[in-house]
Image 1 (cartoon, rainbow over the protein chains, first blue to last red):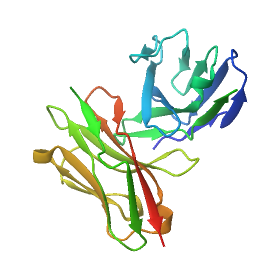
Image 2: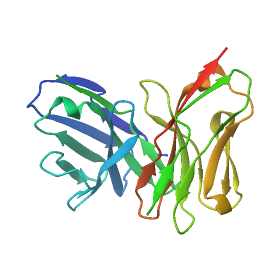
Image 3: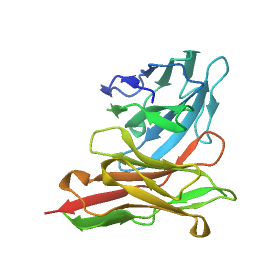
Length: 114
Length: 112
């Protein structure tokens, strides 16, 4: 299955600033996903990032707040913009590994906004 | 509407005892079914998955799960838990659009 490298692993940020999270995959994948896991909660899908097209956002998430880039089949970034303490969460990227019909997750980025 | 339910928020089990975690879904067809485990401060690790075929699925770390179409369930089991099994367990369901929906999770505590 695919191996995902996600950076940074954690960060503490000031409110009003932005953080870009990187997700690098060791193989070409069609679909990449970004999830948010708020403290003590389950995972919620933010958006699906496909190479060569705009990301598709889930209800409650907007591009201005969570812009996503997908420049090629092995890389994607998620930016958390104009952060507030409510954005403190773990953010995870995931890829659909169609060869094994599974989904692999990165180790996550633990974000704290102060 | 499509949904995933994990009825048990928290389960405490003694080391060596059996464990069963429940997962139910609402969907008009057979979805893709997964169980993930998340240890404190860690990412998600896939325990097992079901797409079709034999309804009893074997996974890693001694876990197994059984798909029951009539009950729309995919319960996770382990015959004898180890202290290292203390973690958060998530049931996830793919409803055919390549996106996963996660249950709320079940926290497993293992007592000595």
